[in-house]
Length: 436
Image (tube, rainbow, N blue to C red; front, side):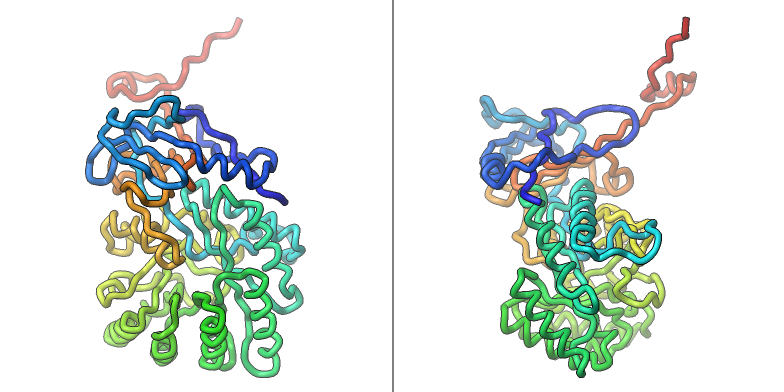
């Protein structure tokens, strides 16, 4: 599958009954058109910022060129998007996805790992997440066993086909790395990195020798200069202490998750583990929407985010499973993850959103995004006037990647014609004309 380009949305949000996504791609047109689209200047008008200002924002070359008061930016012959009624935010990123197994919950029989099927699932999942606002996705991909490197090759192909729409990166996830069986897994992990896997992962909890697993992963990561992103339940404080001691010197860094087991430890033990992780610079990616299928389900409690943050651990939030065995109703929506952290995790709305945007981008090694000139034009506009309302009713969204609109979702709510609808000036359904 070659590179594909999205349909260019109209300059104002489309309206219609119900909710529908507007991110259908056109026929593949190649990288030349992607580069041309990125060079186009776009003006966002009437956008509201989190500090209450209403501004115009000019984008060009994949970056924010200028931010000014409404009507202050000269824009002859520029493409425009009217963001009146929208809150403009740095775009979310998805730090913990499983594109190879996504969208398999309703299938009959065993999950197919044929390369074309894996590529289709990974592509569709990334587009669904893009529609929610995530302009970058980190997908954990299982390698080894009877499937070998086929799933990794398929996800890398999906990445190439999505270039210009969203940034998809892959994490190589072997099952075993120690003992006789682990020798093949280590060789395959090395091959996955050579193929293009940009992150090294795995599940040390499932290896007979978790410490040996960590040693193998960190050694290979140091050799290739790759970040590490590991699955762990986090319910073994001794194992966490060893990981912190071993990972402290690795650059570009180590991320672990979902760490729901930390919530089941005695409070003093959890505090000590959090302090050790913070001192070592180990990041944590929690999954507020539920566990993923990579780990045995030991309870659906989320990592203790407030405790970790208080210790100085940098915490991001991911979506995890997207309608697979780990969560058959998973949505892959970063704003839902932020909603759960705000409603159940004890975070303020702005902190919760930062966990799926700035903190998630940092965990993925992506540049920071601010609504200021010079920063990457990775943006999400959501119907609403403040973050709390956006997390509560985040229906209509406009997604901007590399300075252009790549996805749009519009929702319209109407009420039947009634006295109360008239009195409250509610939006009413169109009247049905009587038949002949």
